[in-house]
Image (tube, rainbow, N blue to C red; front, side, top):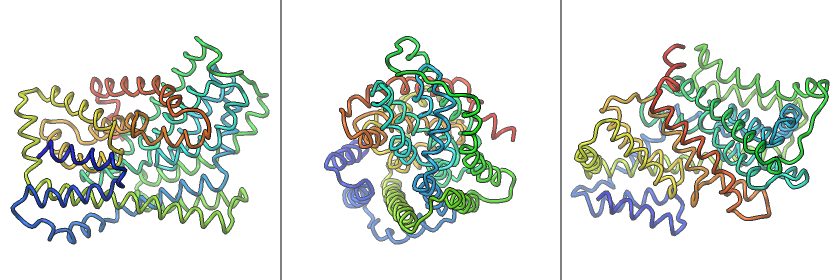
Length: 426
């Protein structure tokens, strides 16, 4: 059954069938061929129970928050401010790309939205200032992945919902690894551009007066981050409530900057409905597939297979990491999470691994899937913003940043406290 389901999943995706539909089709197939019971009769209950959760209301709120920041012109002002602070470093604007992606990751919660935002603002500058298109675009794609690690993260909310794990603890656990990767991205960029200066274009320097004056454009993002995240940890609001507060503040910021219009509001709401509908279709489809797989005994088969390898818990972890890396080449990231978490996480926690720690490790693996071909979504988002050149250039440009993610995986396995220090102490 494991082979049949995996082969069918890859086959359907190769036919470009939407992921949510694929999950439902696989569920129907498991019901017909591997179960003696009419599991389809439970479809209505599964659809209702998988969507009837107040936790999931945070998803459209965080999506809307990101849409307001993008459509309200806040992204462009943030990028210009970071340009003034980072352009003197080897690599110049590439550091502004990573810095802007980091700041928007701390508000939008979506990797694809973050990559699209930064790419739209930054790409016109690359050719004009003589930057290497591979490293420049690769840094945007990699920086965008931070959107699912640095809180608030839609993917961490989904993980917490599926595993019944504290979302505030997951947010805290993702903060330090996310910031460490952002710094590592900038260090790798500086080293590469120091070795080969032509990669980074011409370094520019601004007067201190201009730099300090630009800080006013960074202040709204910082205030928004501390209100959204601070209200959660102060106990004033749940993640869902803090997301609603964040939307209200983001709207006020956009209005103050004269970025609100009837067309802007329409585009924000339309984008939010479209993205939220896609996410919910995937979640509900994955729940139905997991229901049929569990009833048909796949969880037992997978557990028996892993146990049958006679590996230690660490050996089993290495197998799981390898499995996610391979699946990440072919399966869209959110789909990969919701299709595997209900099966894999109980096995890993049964071997003594912490659910919060494993969630952060999983997010790094998912981040890697976002920038590895052939299905890496951020690669296509950045390429569409470039409007010229080859997709292979973006793929090559992400290689240094993929290596940083591999190093973070090794660090998390060797030193679990990197993820657990903040949630255990605060």
